[in-house]
Image (cartoon, rainbow, N blue to C red; front, side, top):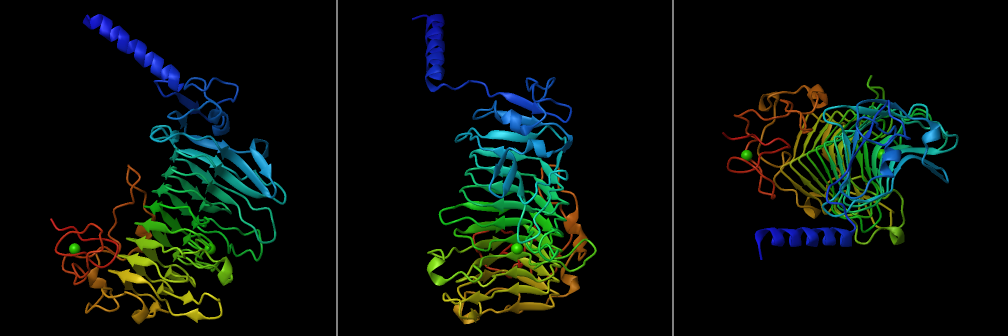
Length: 448
Ligand code: CA
Ligand code: CA
């Protein structure tokens, strides 16, 4: 057989195979722009006006590029109204394994979705509801999401109900809604997202007691979800809240600060940095079995109104590794409860390693050390902690702009000086470290 004929045969075979699979060989690209129109063809030169319209065209592997500028969202754009919910943009189409559908900010442009004008009476607004799976959202910004209901309620910027989704460099701010809410689904990664200055001043007592930066509240079976490199500040309730979660979550290298306060430091809602667990007054027969065990590691909680790291009446413990708490009312509050909800109990079953706290009004409370594994932390190691241990103590550093790739900013705040006695005082918990052992706290001192 000649080279040419073998080449023809393989081309024919390839065509046959691709026809068989019904898939295209080249992923398509679509564009959305503020001066676009949903009757356009969706090319760069003739963009759509909405992500909702672009979704109609996409299949697995395709990309929707969203151009920069402010998108004024209107009530006519609400994709579905279901009961008390008004879901404005509904992403209900799925990609497939290895072929995510991508909704990305175009190059370095900044698309901002402004929901200020969407005020459906007696409805909760969900700015983006994601029920699809294998999606990747990147670089989208949501502002001004409203609350119209005067009794107990909540609106949400991004709500995930799918699996295998990646949320990257999203920014949710200056609205009345919760930033990101994981309602259900597995294998989702929330990476390098920011949620800040969100405050519901409309409902209930106008204290914003339901508006967290990030919420994790799925039923049982929602596994392998991770929050990484996310920040939450000046949210009226908590930074990160996992109350009523039926599954466990990992939160790593995240920062929560100034929560429970307005930007003028007026007192608002609960104000915990990381509220890791709890079920309120749920009776024993309705608790998840097993009770999930959350992992909180490499995180920073600073100047939150209430606790930096809080077990919130959880039943059983969490894994708390290499976290740093600074100037919270209580830096580490490990409170648990009994299964029958009859009594509060000092925290049991916790595993705490290599944690560091400084200048809390209270440091570690509600912890049953003999019923937990808590050797190797600042509160029980022979270390002394003073200002001289740190390269910087300016907590405003936490708000600095991210690095170009979306990673957290490089700051001096709470990083250890080379001669700090907190260096190499920890134990190996499976996280990377330099020198002879892990350091205490969230920032490992790099040994050159
Ligand atoms: Ca909360
Ligand atoms: Ca070290």
